Image (cartoon, rainbow, N blue to C red; front, side, top):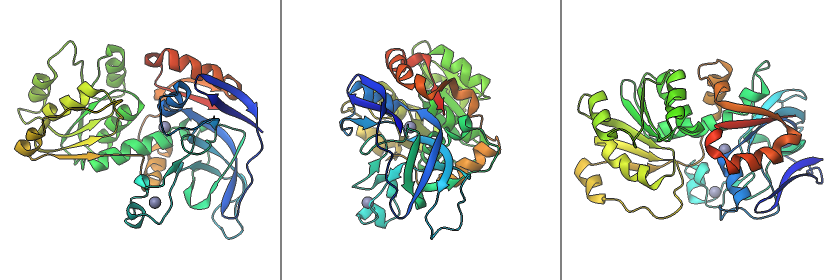
Length: 337
Ligand SMILES: [Zn+2]
Ligand SMILES: [Zn+2]
């Protein structure tokens, strides 16, 4: 079969590779929709220490069932599915506590093991989610990124009526802000690129702040009537944004860190104590696929607008190179097959 393979950092191409062997318990899938993620770009750049090479990329995958395990009675050939790409061990401490998204031995497709930006993939039955017919492959490729945002909002324990400050108006930040609207909270997006803030407003996100041109702390104080944001999601990985999250959050508030900073970030932990903050990590997603599928299928969250460009499978290597060169030009690129 054909696959999009990174042979070594900076070397991406469409290659002929062996079709994956289906093991008992796996579902064989014909792949149709594939989102290109920042982590795929990180694998291309060679900056993600978890990635080994050669590596087939791709973990934002939608497709149709070719064959399901005999024991399964829920999936039929032709059914549309999305894959949950985090393969966990089931035995370690976090797994035993149902925190499978941060399994000690986690194998994420396209990172630790081969991804599914390919004609076919084979994936464990319990990590394959059926989706309603009639939802486009383009939108279905956005389900996995949406689960990351839904998980982050849950980790931040955001409630109706509260303010959510989101640092970083990339796909994860914008999806988290849209999900905040769904649950009746008030999102405030903070990003240094004005075009992204304008785009956020076009999605119905009421507040956008450019922290370079404006005093973000003063603006958030104004918007929240002096309280500051009850919850903050850091979705940029920028060291400055991680640091600022402590100034944006309310006393007794919550911060969920989703972005991956490149290095250590120095923080005034006395402020954690003074404000009695809950600062939590948020990694991948856990039990968020069913809800995210409903949000996409029911059009409760506009995922299609986040797709900057739709390309053919053959165009994927060139797209990876272009996104790596001009990351600010793209929110999400989806390849269709
Ligand atoms: Zn992703
Ligand atoms: Zn585990």
